[in-house]
Amino acid sequence: MKTRLLRIAAASVLAIAVSAGIAWWQVRSATTTVESGAKSAVPIGGPFTLTDQSGKAVTDTDFRGKYMLIYFGYTYCPDVCPTELGVMTQALDQLGPKAEQVRPVFITIDPDRDTVAHMKDYVALFHPRMVGLTGTPEQVRDAARAYRVYYAKAPQKDGKPDEYLMDHSSFIYLMGPDGKFVGVYPGGTGADKIVQDLSSRIAG
Image 1 (cartoon, helix red, strand yellow):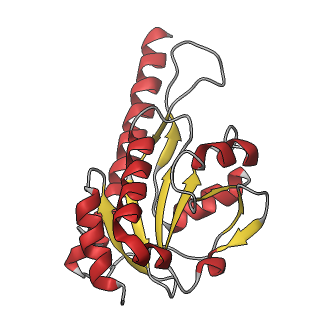
Image 2 (cartoon, rainbow, N blue to C red; image 1 turned 45 degrees about the vertical axis):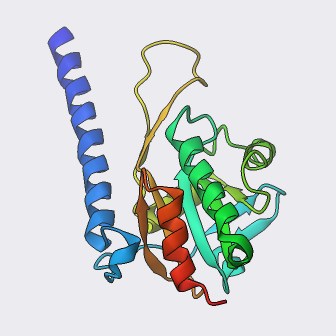
């Protein structure tokens, strides 16, 4: 019995690793960095319907006419999510007036805990124009699939049921004013590099 449980656990870990690897490969095969200008071989992005931090239903078409910086994460994330959202905020601050042409968007991959009210409090800690989006588990799943985002609840050894971490891929997506995929900024990309890239794309 113990051996069987160990095999099941090992298989589960392997499945998570494979899924994460596939998600990483799909995004990386689309483009290595935004600056490359490579066209995506794998469709990334698409229609979504979610709820913003004010409780309003929004779709991808509500952001037409502006560039979008999109990050998928969750508010209980202890490190990478606040770091990447901080980089987005810093980049927008450095862009100056051009930042008006860019909309920062944070989409949760943990809708069970990231309620509308919680998202409102969280995004307020970053940029004043940052949009926080949540929704039903099905809506979040569909949005994540469209962007080839990997996420899964991490195995929990102890603690309370609602005190868990989420495994997820970490990319800042850049979408054009037409809603089409432009590229990604891999995790760890500095604000200066994002500013340089966006400045070359935004007129004025």
